[in-house]
Length: 399
Ligand SMILES: Cc1ncc(COP(=O)(O)O)c(C=O)c1O
Figure 1 (cartoon, rainbow, N blue to C red):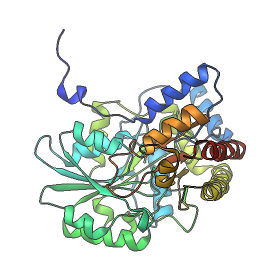
Figure 2 (cartoon, rainbow, N blue to C red):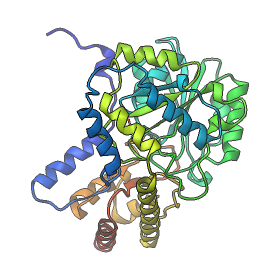
Figure 3 (cartoon, rainbow, N blue to C red):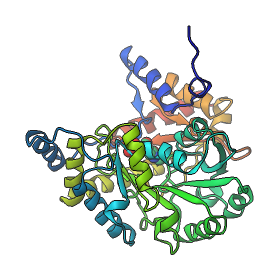
Figure 4 (cartoon, helix red, strand yellow):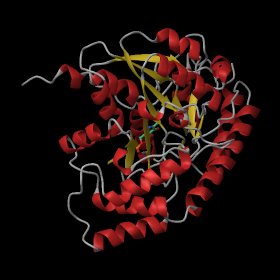
């Protein structure tokens, strides 16, 4: 048998998919699992967006498009980003891809060299793809711990202490997956100062930008001097309930031509019909996404209140996205679970509640407690049924 490359045999993944497999196996056996694992809106894509895709299909929008995307969409994105971030962005700075995710890899490929020891700071806990892609592209991932005591921001002094002459890139995600934390303007300003001082690129993952529950969304790109060194990445998946359509985009004056060349080298172009759907998503009525965001906020309040009422659990109110990240350190002790992962398994097998544990989002920060992730992209009814089950589980399993 010929060999598999080391890079591929060692490639990490999103462990969430392993849990999803466990959940679907149990469901297939007839178990009524309430699922909080999935990071996607539980709504249908708004009908005006579906209609635009059908029209595109009927109008013969079937061929390849320019690798960076159709001009109509790049214009709509430039206008949207300029409007929502308070900056001036040109259509030429925009590249569209099949999801926001590919830009993590394209950015690493564009700003680090393979095997040269280039370092990438990334939030931990965080979206697992940041570190798996960093390793796959021969760079060095350097975790930056998010602290519950700082409402899941990191300590900027600690961040600066981790920077070396090899540091090329820092990844930010606000609102954050998995903690729901939102970086304040003040934090972003401090980070911006450090990024400028050490001449770093910033990858600003803004896929949850429309899901800020308290206050308003801030992009680091809007801080003076930051636009030129920031890669803004956003997309259709979360805002417009379009995860399976696959459409995302990045904005960077300097890197757009390189991203476009990467697109030519990989996918050729983004899906043609989906791009027309996205033009409608951005330029059409915004009532549906606004309705969805209001529902997420109500669910946030519902689940956070309910979790905080349970023994052994404390949960900060997440400022954005659709994730709650309760601290379950006490609960683990109460029910004899060695750690959050053991608790996750107990909840799945003994209480029919599916969640993810902190280890699915990177190595746990020593001494910073045990956490679970609940994605509250599910109905109020499911949330309340799960909270009843959790209460019952705690009562009956308490040692
Ligand atoms: C932080 C973060 N970035 C990027 C993505 C990928 O988004 P897309 O579906 O647009 O590829 C996700 C999806 O879960 C995410 O949570």
